[in-house]
Length: 436
Image 1 (cartoon, rainbow, N blue to C red):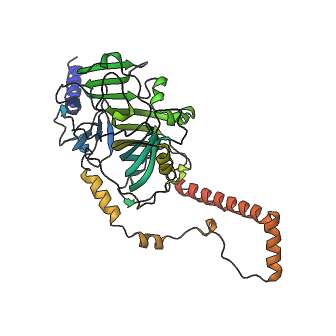
Image 2: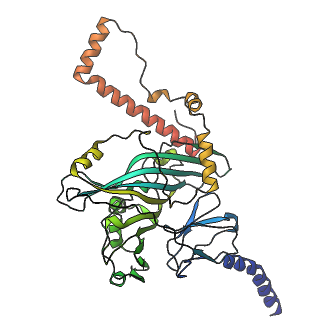
Image 3: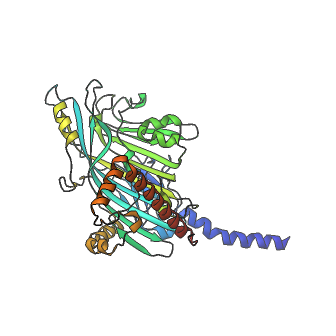
């Protein structure tokens, strides 16, 4: 009996440091004024990679000591950096709102045009390799409060100008950087603006108030109001009806894509009375974690190996203006070149993390001309060089083109070359020799 008690005591002694470390890393995010918990606050490690989000009680997931210092972000609040895991509560202070003035000149100005600044942090990871992306964009939206207006509108962000910074690294610590990537795995381009829903009854008067819309197993919407500022945190996976907040992603839900985490937060400012409007949208943020994304992802990883995608994005409204139908058509037809519009950071956007600044500096220091000249393309994916032909050969080629024979042979050859290239790439990724 004494022997068993001794073994239990030794096991408890060994377990105590683990329990103590878990308690030390249990962190709650709360409002500095009301001390109420902040759900869906995002935490990032020392390298800028997302660590997770706070739950409805403001609790962050377990964070290893090696990830510190961490940075916590909550749209509409001043971000905070925590140097060590000794902190148990993070009090976030609200940031000043910079919602632009909106002037309606006449009844002919029926369309709302919005310019916005976007930051996104995306990660594509497998068991062995990781691709990290930081991108900033200038985007615009064309919204019509009046459904009778017949002109093309768009509620998803249209990219006017963007800058991308990629970092590729593997488990061995080898890495490289680039401003380009052959695959698009970010979710941010689908996260648009929807007509604001009605306010819950508890928030229909100014002052401090909150309300929760319960899903099947967890809260689907958490509303809060402080005078003329309203925010809503949405768990899109809590219930199928929550998908109304992300209508542009409905096809991905139908296709059976495995979303593991999907949270959206919207901030409204200058809210008068008991109605929200597109005019009062100050910004929104989102976190999406999925298993799988897009097509032809074999170029990143082994074909039999799963891959995971995480996207965290912040959208800040810079300018809003009601315009006429004629002006809207000009915006729609205007072609934006890369240098035709500059990227303007939102005044309320926080400073970039040192790790992100270091990535930007590395990419900007690249000699793109030297990289391009050193690249050796696969000749099978290129057209054959032109050869001199005598008169009879030119007549024969003209006949083949007129009858479609040339197009059929070209399509067949391209298809065969692409199939061979894909098979070789697959065998290379899987570490097996290609078959002749």
